Image 1 (cartoon, rainbow, N blue to C red):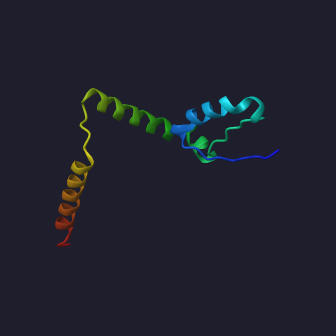
Image 2: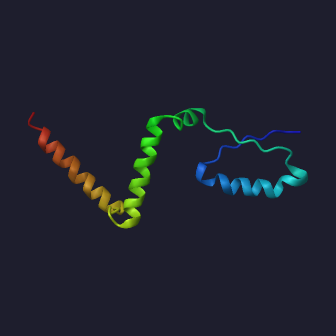
Amino acid sequence: MQTIQVEVEDSKLETVLTLLENLREGIIKNITIESDEEFEAYKKTQRFQEDKASMQKALADIESGTTKTLSQEEYEICMNNFTSALRQKHAHR
């Protein structure tokens, strides 16, 4: 018997598990999921709870239209303007 180790992005895990479950009978003996230890430790912290709440609020604001999302082009223009303004502001110091 051989062992195969595969790293899967969290967003694709369900798809991979579905594929593996469909192959399981007679082909796959055991499926084990191991998570990143650092991430698991982070999930138990107050900081994680704060970050999670912040992300949930940001997503709700986007979905409700309270916050406007930018296209890649709009973002690049805003960031270029911002960095140019910073350079000008601090060029004389």
